[in-house]
Image (cartoon, rainbow, N blue to C red; front, side, top):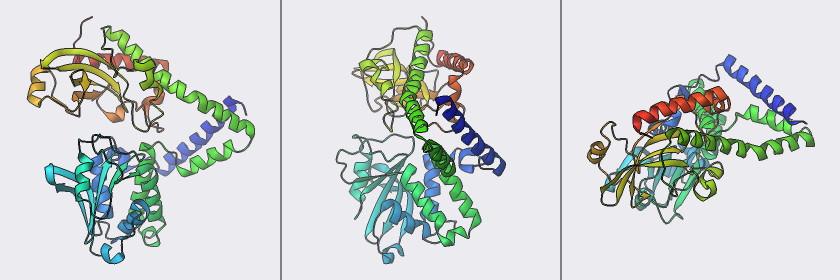
Length: 399
């Protein structure tokens, strides 16, 4: 099958499913509308209530039992589960708060949830100290392990994922005869599952099956699909490069040539951006203020993690590390902005507007993503122009 024909067939399948979704209200998803799906705090609240036998669902420990069996894969006796407590933001030493805890007389199971946030130093190491007869479970979009700064010894960490483990758990919940009877809860679980598929870049089951059947119809179809697959990464990385080149040219200043630059090591950060589940964080840095404390500089930085971000980072001895300036010190050196501290960031925001729902996501390419519009020339130019307007306010530079 010729590439054009295959693309048209896939386009038709997607178009049919989009039409069905619109007519049946499939896009009316409370998790997406309220942005709960991208908010770790609210996702944890939802998971907590679902897992809690005393939750507002009034279904007892059905969800918890299925979670222990299919996600944690632990064999906890029913006599233990009958005396279970589920906690949210459980406080331990060093003022640490564990996102979710399942506790029985003989088990203390910490669960850390990371959707978009990064680890704190020694975070999982501290959780491991209080675990009892269980590992620390680390729940992320795709089952990544925590960073070395969070824990060095990782043999007692069990990674679990929204993309696979939580989706399968929800399948088991939706198959349960007692849950099938409760229409309101069943619909919420369907919507939650759909939201997870969106932020983990997965197709709905029916659409995926139709595309699979199309590709299996002939060797020509499969060859065309493989040819597209081979070209796809290059197309995506070319776009990243074009954005950085466009912004760098418009700013027109001498940048810092270091390991954090998108061009470093033959542009490895861009070339491998789509090869890893996390982000290589390609970017551009400019010196803003030098030696604000011994060995401490402030850089203006543009960076793509999931979104294109702009702001100020703090470097110690020319390396980006945990934050070494206080909010008061940051306000002194960047008086026109309110600090937004995150790791080495002193201030950051999305470009061209600071709203994740109104900007392209370069990593997780669901159908509603504005990312695809960047391949339309008029939108790309508008994106660069609007980003530059915001950059000039954040970083008042002069060529």
